[in-house]
Image (cartoon, rainbow, N blue to C red; front, side, top):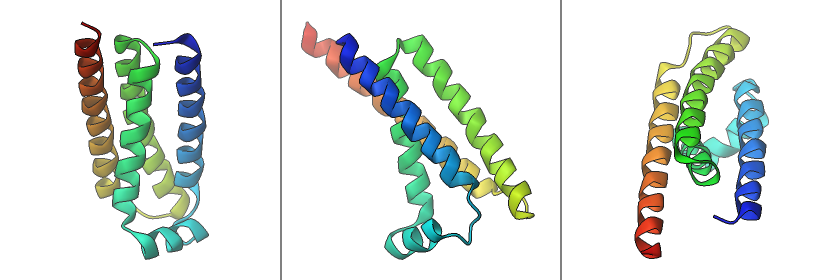
Length: 123
């Protein structure tokens, strides 16, 4: 992939990951949750956000580095859910953690398919 495009994917990944961290740590009674629940399920929002954020490192970095970043993202997701539980004073949201991890898994599988298709097109 062209270095400039790869650099842009990396910048997008940094921005989106930072946004996910900030939005996750905002208390559940906040503005964004009421709007998201009115539009669609927050579980789907989390799943799609983590799937997209897990797809980007696989396309922007080498395959091994991308997978390592995705494993780090999985640990970050679990840590954020635990921290969110501590901030709100409630238990850890295990359902949310599972949804996030499934989103990361879907993102990895999607990006591996994209990379496979891209390698077949080059031949």
